[in-house]
Length: 376
Length: 118
Image 1 (spheres, rainbow over the protein chains, first blue to last red):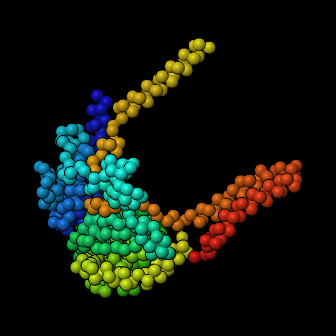
Image 2: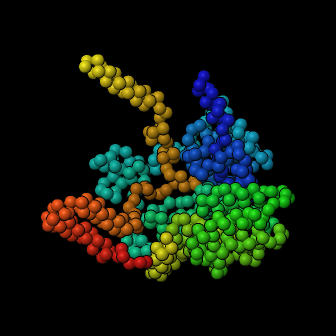
Image 3: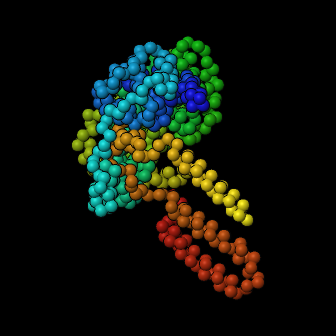
């Protein structure tokens, strides 16, 4: 009795969904989560429903399968204007513009037990066998030997800042990490929270930018502000962008005023992500300026949309702390980011160049560190 | 007296039974029930190549050392000041020894560049 009531209450609660966003669906997904009946889960572990929005690239299919298996039970997947990936048994699809009702129905059915939790797709075994190996069952011999818990230990590498040789952690980030643009997958080597090297594995998926410069600026701010911890301002920007797209009048000056006094600009370190003499803070200032101008020609197209061939995203990230790197990545619109991220160039030749630049990077690393210390 | 003992035993038995019930009925969200994909960290789809067990440099550690050196000094100096007049020279000697030991830490920190503004 009591359990039945609790179950009904849980079913009526907002549905936690994790969006895995494909090409052209970013703005639609952002708008979707303005609905109070949904909760945007920042991690797949907090989600009940994996919402795959838009077409999934061939290369991203394995990542979708892994995300699915990382969800806790009971779980379900909804393919919204998407092509279900192979191995998903009886996929639920939705081609409507507004999938909230479908998500709610699936969530309620899951919680009330009317719908079975989806089974695993990937095998339930560690990447390498380790149990029972070694003197203490740690998976191998010695400190660095073997594969405890199925994965080898991180190897030492010189720190960019002072050459201290500690363990460098290399992991792929993306393509569906909430703080990165959808589709962008980077292989990042970290020393603590400082990025030693970054390598581009997959460029971000193409997104249709709004024709209206003000809407583009509002959406960009809506994605950038949560990184600074200003979620309420972000929601305000996204709601304004949605209203403006629908042709409703909004008070842009008021939003601009709010953002100005929020301290967002002061929270961005100066001089990071320098491309064509503009850093992250200047790009955010440009978005704010776009809120002041006329709706049709808000953003200066030549400044933000031009292909930036000489600069590369991975070079901008090297030597930066993780928080700065995320600010840098999110300060570009998708088209600019794609032009900054030529995936073909990421080959052995690039690796060689990175090694040649090693000494120069050492100096830069010191500079960064010194700057960080005075800044905090 | 026997009644009090009985009451105590009953309380202990009740608490033990409650804990046992909670443990028994609790949903088994332990690491045992997680599958291998669920055990891997959430990286937005990718799987890490290496174990996340690693050594990295805690950059604030010299600051911590300096803080503890001066904080411990104060911790001892307040009570010492209260008894200093009664104890006299003996207390003076003890404080000297204490400060000498602490200043080794401060000198070490100096060598590591704590006082250099970067």
